[in-house]
Amino acid sequence: MSWNTLEHPLDHGCPGTPPTWEQPTVEAARAHVQAWLNHVSDHLPGPMLDFALLVKEKLEPIIRYCRHPITNGKAEGINSLLMAIQRSARGFRSHASFRIAALFHCGGLDLYPANTNALVKA
Image 1: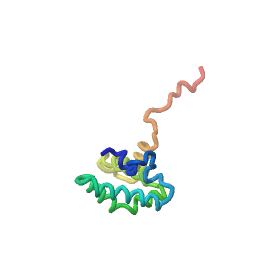
Image 2: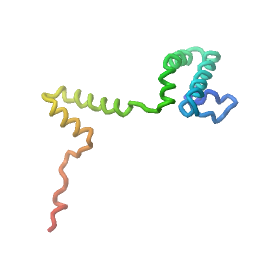
Image 3: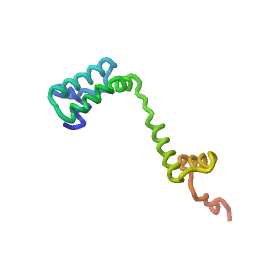
Image 4: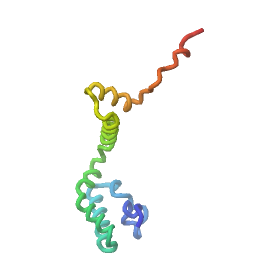
């Protein structure tokens, strides 16, 4: 079974069915996931059944995403980068030093000074 089947569980006779998060209403999204859960529990034992049980357990956050498609992925990415900076330095002596390192690495600042010879007119 491919990931495409997870995105389009009702393709059996209905090609072009949009994935769960593109359903027109929250009720349609819930019915879409429930149809997939029924299909997996009836036809696919083993690891897919375990995955279906996990999806069933996390159904409300999935439906919440369908209602409000907002994630905290960018915040998690920035946090991961900051933690990597902190680990690489083995700790900072002050908050100001950590702030400077975070601004330097996350701000996309260039380490080398600008070429001032290009600005000087001969």
